[in-house]
Length: 110
Length: 114
Image 1 (tube, rainbow over the protein chains, first blue to last red):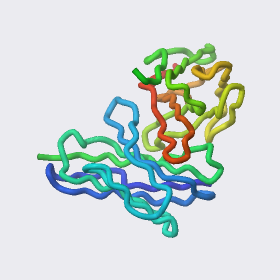
Image 2 (cartoon, rainbow over the protein chains, first blue to last red):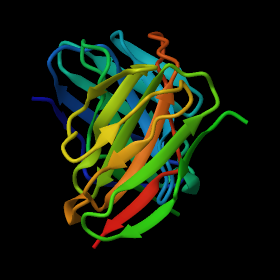
Image 3 (cartoon, rainbow over the protein chains, first blue to last red):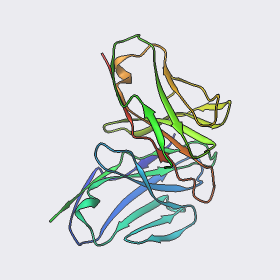
């Protein structure tokens, strides 16, 4: 089966940096995605990694290590609006299905 | 405006009464998918479709049907709903560009089966 693990909850201070980890064990690998989901809303795409290394997009960066089955999402200069759930999703090598972790609920405090 | 729409947004029904949740996208995407989201379980894929007339089971297909007769529409059918299908449902679509394959999600349908 597929197994994707993320911490359930995290709290961080406005202006700080937070790292949300995701580990996965899947039957093959063809891409890892991070989505943001505010309460009561639909998930929205943040980042995509298919090769090892860091992808940077403004205040958000995502890192992937395929040999370790590990990714993290780094959020810098935290803002109150960053309070949301962050979902890690993996596309195994069949390429047609997606498997999501249970999400990490991030609370940003003043 | 590029979007994925779902209807209805909220539905309360009773066990055994057939229902359909519609999903439509205006981005000419080949790939469409249905997910359900439950507390503690995250998003789980129900069915997906690679293109018109091509559908396949996801992780939790039992009790659901889908059809893809047109590229833009991908309805989810519950022939005989049961209380364990009470959930938040999301439809999503993507271009199937392997460089990114970003999925765009609809606003969600909150279903309660009594």
